[in-house]
Length: 263
Image 1: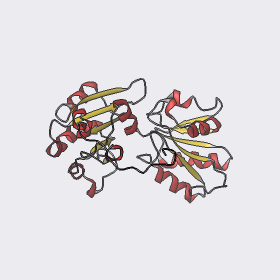
Image 2: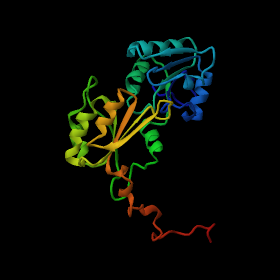
Image 3: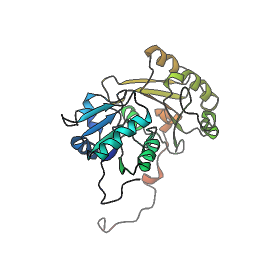
Image 4: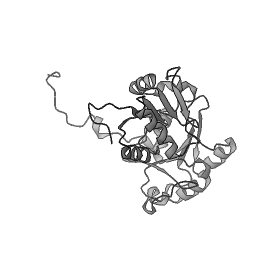
């Protein structure tokens, strides 16, 4: 159960952000500093993020653990009176297995809470200096993935269906299938639609590949990317597309009420 106010919580799901140690929230850093145990996905999180932990904290790399083994560590820490942080790359609300882990903790009567983190797509957009929504062009962002050797996608969430919206697409966990995905998107977006891949955002190995649906797969394959990358697709990524498209919120022609301070 999500912990109720006033109840002692020892299990904390914490978003570690995209990778940089200084992109964690203040709350996340405080939780790491006092944690007795920290579980982290070693594939995505390095020693710089873990440097926020105490020197005597128990560090558990979960990359080779299954779900039940991870939950066993969390529950054991709780029952022995130790604070434990379960670090999730990016933000726990997306592709973190939060639901599976928390439901098992609920069955054991272990309270838990969640601290959000900077999601990978937001870090990628920041590096590009891009707003993913452009007035009168794209006002939606679709966060999705595709199926490879992973959980099946619902039939109603096909990539083709999302493409018909012509919204800005952010594809997670899909870099090894980029050639197939690009071909699937071309009928709706066109081969010249901007496509960007950001790998290891905010980390020393950071890499940005900018192209179109026609050539982005060639670039990805040439660099040998296999993981830790997000794919962004959509006309909102084209700097020329923004020209003449401005938000009504800040339009100088919009009628505004004068405040007491302005008077």
